[in-house]
Image 1 (cartoon, rainbow, N blue to C red):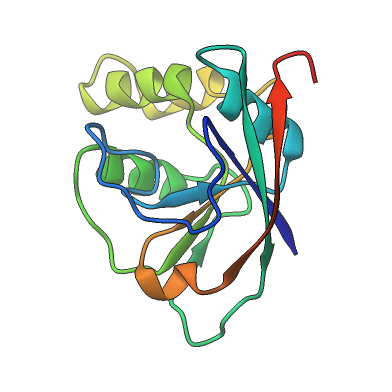
Image 2 (cartoon, one colour; image 1 turned 135 degrees about the vertical axis):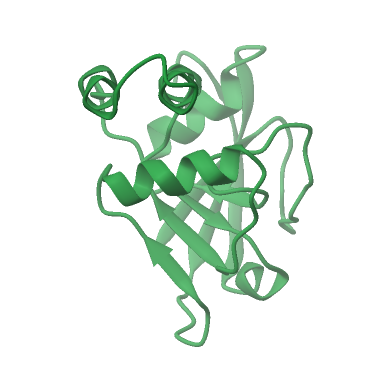
Length: 154
């Protein structure tokens, strides 16, 4: 399976970086099946970046959590990760909660909107996908294929 990672730089050796803000599936190395989405990630600040391409070879001994769509379980998992609660999965895969969606998650957590209102607001206009490699063992399933410079016009 081919996966893409959008970045400002070539990433031949993926790493798990601890960043300032918690993300959907907590700290990890994020990829996607969708090349167009990786281009958006790579070009979101300056309009140019690098698409890194990897061959992913699943390892059945790893602990994997997969969400095929946005569900109640997905919402609760994202909310916990974004609030700083770690998990014990090697890999987590599923839809993205971009910044707009996370604002709805925060409104839900703070009681400003109901669960039903969250689901009405959270409808995506385009498909999204992310797969997060959360442990060093999970990173061994990725093999760098190539990197390509891109612009937001690609």
